[in-house]
Amino acid sequence: MLPIRTRSIFRSRWIALLWAAGIIWTAMEYAGGQPQNDTAANASSNDDVAATQAAMNALGIQ
Image 1: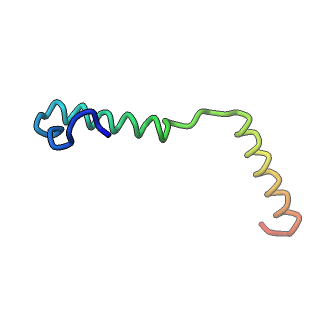
Image 2: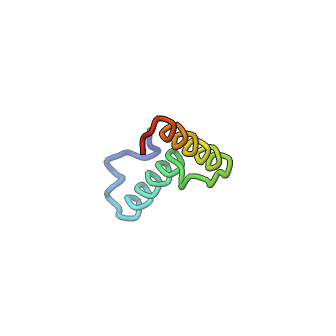
Image 3: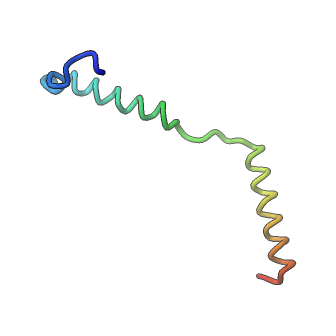
């Protein structure tokens, strides 16, 4: 799976650092960074909050 033997990864500190950087980079690519600011999503969530507040007011819940 790895291009070098796993036993030889940690014999050199530099190779271990490169290996760890690769793992971190892969995790960041897979999980993604910070979410993008989507104004359409924010507007719909604001509408949802307003609708929920209106429904609670209609039921008499404060």
